[in-house]
Image (cartoon, rainbow, N blue to C red; front, side):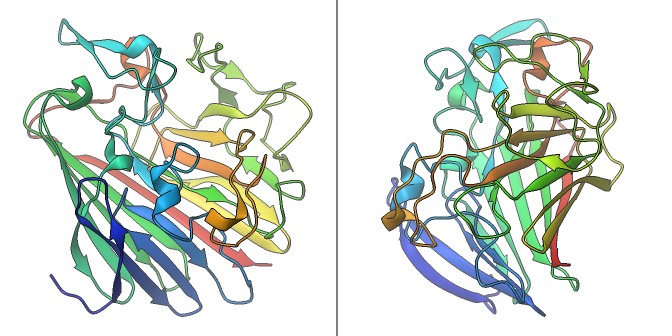
Length: 336
């Protein structure tokens, strides 16, 4: 393993393995990654005196329920699977129901966001980590080999490539679960969001999609032009349907506040958006030293549509031997 980047020890994971912290830099931009969860801890650009993502000051908060997904790569199936079950090739699979004993969230209680990944390469502007998720874990078939490559490009953008392969048919839907706050204030009051999607998925009380995509026009979910992230209406924790076909890399969302803008591009078919309505993290645990309260950050997660295995007409998240799952996402922050 090349160790030309700045690498330090960040504590011990629950399994006793050492968690590493990797610092990346390119031009005016810098980032810090943790092997635990393949987590983005910090992302900074020149001219801005704070991290643009929320993070923990030590490993401890990442091991608690309140911060367990902050900046992590979640999977092997991001988001939710209704009732913790789905059918694959005529076989009914039962998964770990780790959310209120009802749904499977982010792959279950030992999903990729709860694992200490292996650092394979690290140089000044990029690092690559890997993880093997064993056959049968949380009810998912197949040994799934995942890699995550983070890179700071010449424009200072954070570029993320995810790949996965399996030795048996399985489900795979990975997502980066970062929380963004561009102006460094206590909440998202000044943040405006634009999403290049005209449909979204309405959800039930367990946050499982109800039916086919709905049009956003005339709803609280109309972000076809810039609109406030937080409103007095429904909590925002929904998937926006970008397309039905993966693979075309394009801009899908724009977030802005305090003279900073964030452009998100991806190959993914959906963008899950969560407005951080339930965040409640004391200041002694946070990167900034200030509490992360309600709406302190917004999660913008490129991924496939949630609960896809239980909707026959939706784009599939089945991964088979000989195939390679690939996701390319880019988060480009800049000052106006």
